[in-house]
Length: 183
Image (cartoon, rainbow, N blue to C red; front, side, top):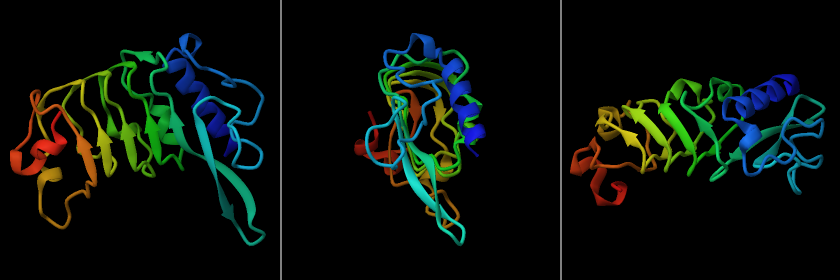
């Protein structure tokens, strides 16, 4: 698992022009990406881990729970890197206030993701239907209609806890988006 995670992190770094990031401490180093005790200061900038106990002997397996790269000069025209899906325990992703352009493809997000902060970028196209339960996408260039399943009362509809969207650019019924969710 560690080699897959290191591969994913290196791919994310190069896909988002990591050499130009404001903070890149620890990235691509031989240092553990998770601190040795699972708490403490991270050795790689923006990475927070938690301890997953597995197996009968309950050996510790530190996995990335949160990636915080807000306002860090992430740049791409290709949207979020597909390697994100390899971070299987990722629950929170912060990529606000960067220069990420292209469409937002929900297929590159791990199924464990619960919270996506991607406001103030240059995303275009429609808002995807398979986003985490909370997402913040305001101050982008999304267009079209807000996905109908998010507004449905159907029990099979995706559960949305909170979201923000530009209702001036993305058509969203008032009864669904309301003033609290519109930016």
